[in-house]
Image (tube, rainbow, N blue to C red; front, side, top):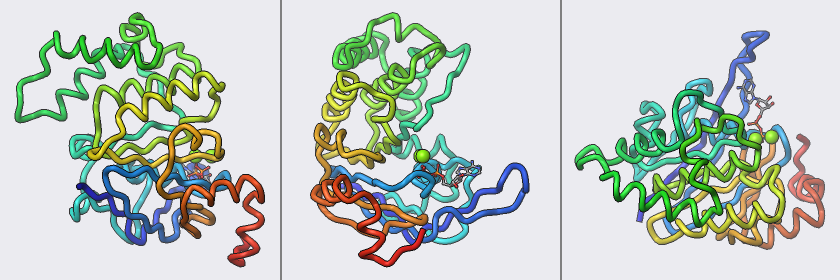
Length: 258
Ligand code: ADP
Ligand code: MG
Ligand code: MG
């Protein structure tokens, strides 16, 4: 079993205009293990994407206090690529276009980066895995030959993130609003992809505004984030409660004014 632990994490970002530092995360605590699905819900602007980007190592986000530990080892000094090799994966809320790199090239490079002690993956094996992943996601082969996300619709980009997930097979995946902008068919397809990688050697942190994706990907724990930290954790029923009461009910209960 592997463990990802977020310990009293405080994170600031510098505002591009004023150059002033602003604290976004104000002490996040979270422990997750492989074999588990965790969901984080929370209002807009509360720092969910900041948490995702910081776990993955985006240098724009400055950790001012606390730690991020993978199997008790701090990741803070490690750049993004080292964290990816260690088994972390982030499906971004807004996946970027990369011109000049095909999906296939990207996937092969990412897979090979995770097996430094081994030979690069054989083309035959790579293509067999790619075929399987494409079919799980109802994607056509030409998607793999196209430049990374170039001209992809929002839904295609999200599907493409899950293609990467299926091919790279990380230990921990953070899925930042995977469900945003997806119609119900696309939501079911990407959920099928996530459920396909689920198992004892995989853990996922799903960030979402809405309960609907949790119908397809069942969380073991649901956390609510407000004001840059997790204010309440519970089981799937907590998501039902949020859907019924909105965040206002929790704010009242916890006496939070953010
Ligand atoms: P959420 O994902 O919960 O909607 P975010 O993490 O995107 O929240 O944003 C939290 C706060 O941090 C917002 O006030 C946002 O404006 C600010 N923020 C996030 N990323 C940046 C950034 N790169 N530069 C400046 N401010 C940022
Ligand atoms: Mg947001
Ligand atoms: Mg966000």
